[in-house]
Length: 272
Ligand SMILES: C[S@@+](CC[C@H](N)C(=O)[O-])C[C@H]1O[C@@H](n2cnc3c(N)ncnc32)[C@H](O)[C@@H]1O
Image (tube, rainbow, N blue to C red; front, side):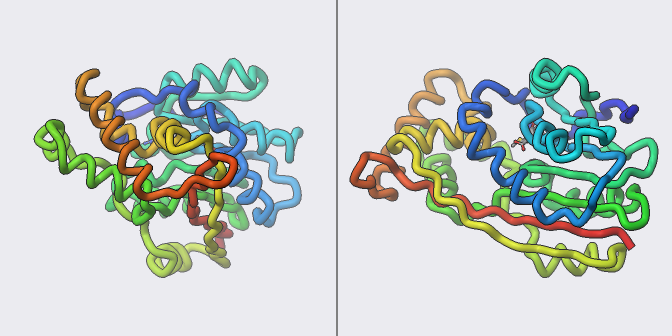
């Protein structure tokens, strides 16, 4: 399926993603795709787009479920798209930015795992409405996002950002990752376009290898807006301070693991 080309590069993240860092936790990051897919009320969708497909892990979940569907993936990161193409050479992938992306033809399913949190707060609802309107009647708009703005792991990032030689650099930038819209807001905005809007939360508890495991996890995602703008020396200092903070906040389990609680928000809407 042809996809509209990338636009103005207005994605909230400034530096390209690292598929390798992201895939260090491939299994844990892919599980929500399966949990989301399990609630999609379609028997045999013909056309599917994985929006923000990353390295193709969520696209692979879709392809396994519906091997005969026409599935494509779009992502604003060239590194992610290159990795996805290598992983799934039979599917179509394109670099494109959600800010101005619309499928060329109405599709059955728009699927998105862990992407909308990277869009600026005020841009999310207009994008979602535009995408819902691009579905066939009865088509499904499904997404999952981390909902962890107030988790200890994320509060600690902001505390460390405000207290260190990097604070001046980081105060100039407004990291994109603020709170996500509430279920109430999402329902009210999308229901007028949809016959049903199903929203739920799941709290995952990921056993990671010590506090360093939490750092490795968030280095691939939520920590990026904080460390990407720093020099190598400042980044090292930031990561050491962040690790110290995590050690204060998270107890170690008997086997040395640390449980990272990870709340995620899911939404499955059917176009009227
Ligand atoms: C956390 S990864 C999710 C990857 C994959 N969907 C998964 O299930 O693991 C987020 C992806 O969203 C992409 N992304 C962020 N902002 C985007 C935008 N404005 N347009 C398209 N993709 C975007 C990133 O490049 C990244 O690959």
